[in-house]
Image 1 (cartoon, helix red, strand yellow):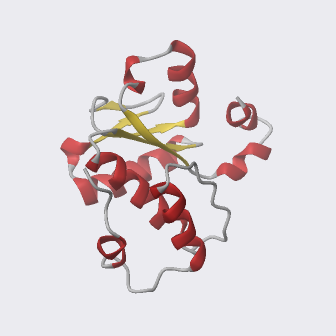
Image 2 (tube, helix red, strand yellow; image 1 turned 135 degrees about the horizontal axis):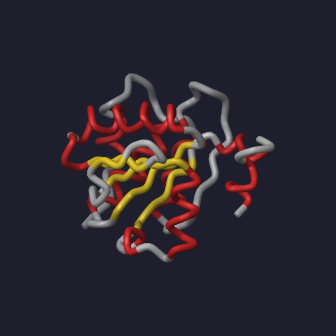
Length: 147
């Protein structure tokens, strides 16, 4: 399966892609990992959405991690609004919804635990989006990011 075209991504937004977005999408298309550090509101989400769509089109799973449950719940609702309830799941300490969905939103701790347990949920995993990476400096949650 082919990756989503830039045109299909651009069509959802009312702005032209910035160079860092084009560079990130090029790197993803080349099979590279990407770390995007940019100010709030600059368009990092567009890159994450591109990576998720590319994984789905290739019949792979996409994990979206957030450092806290509230952000995970918010992102779950955002993704459900776009992809539908059947395509998105949520896995936090409090919620377990549609955990076999192709797109799974979770806290970073849940992902860490899956990796340690060598969970079958990691099968067919094509992309992991680590949102809010600045939590690396958080005294409580930072060690999870480091691992």
